[in-house]
Image (cartoon, rainbow, N blue to C red; front, side, top):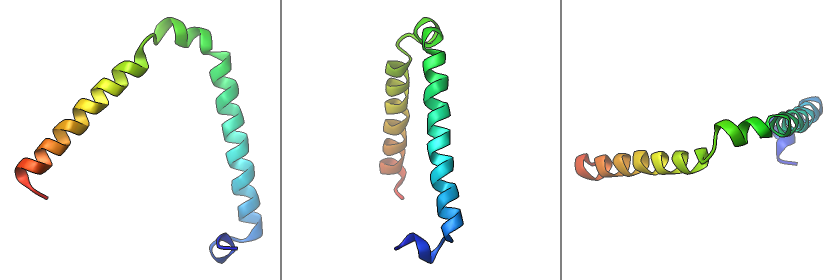
Length: 68
């Protein structure tokens, strides 16, 4: 196994447990707060996508203009 070259069996088990537990708590927390998300963060995904696209476009333009 590829991971066994870098991690012991105990560490691999801990990583798997941690990822599963963290994801479970994340999903539970999101489901608990979904009413607040709908109320306070309406269309937030669109805003993040637009602003993120603008930032990436500026970064790419600067890289093209100034090189490397």
